Amino acid sequence: ANIGSNFPPPPAPPASGPSRSWLYVRGYIDSTSGLGGFLPFWKASSTMTNTPPGSPTGNYLVNIFDSIGNLLEQIPFAPDSYLVENGDIDSLDEGQFLVPVPVLPDMHAVQVVNTLNSQIIASLTGSTSLPSILSVWLSDTNGGSFSGTGPLVVHWTSLDADPNAQLLYTIQYSTDGGTTWENLDMDVTGTSYQIDSLYLPASSQALIRVLAGDGFNTSSPMNSPMFVVPNHPPTISIS
Image (cartoon, rainbow, N blue to C red):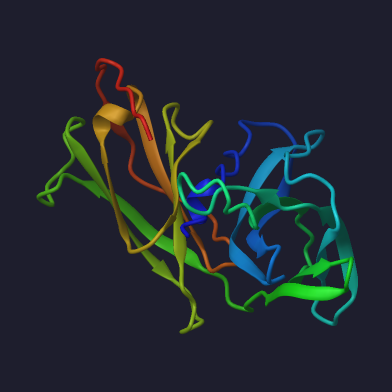
């Protein structure tokens, strides 16, 4: 089943003022087999007084450890059940979780445990190498300059010193020169992304930015050059 699409994307960072960083621990658990796994983690920010919503409290724990195995944080949660196959009302044995964890400077490993039987459902250790985005640029579908209308293609280059890293990307859009951001897409593979500019709100100070994630670590964002999206009729998307 494609469970990645069942997650609401983490919120874009706050506009200004003091902020706090969060690591969104994402994954799935099969209640029948007791097996589960992680989906790529992502980092986001909120105001200091705002705790992002996550999965409800339950019989599972997210444990956060430092590099020598000390327990730094422990957060209880319960997976949210959902339909594995569209229309299959009997397939309610698999659940997803999205648990926001405060980012700590020495966090190194994450573990999910079932407290009813002490079973370790999944564990992940962060790489010592961090992913990075080197450059971001825009074009039309023919490789020429983007005119502000029609399909927009976002290109980027990235780097991770770990040869085994499988990077996934988050694409964000700003209408105010980078003061605020909204998520266009996440868990994107490859190094390009196409969107019809009709789906982008009009702006004279538009920016695209890209973040890379290796499953545990998230890069700093890299912005595109500023561009213009002219006024256009609203577009409705049904998914």
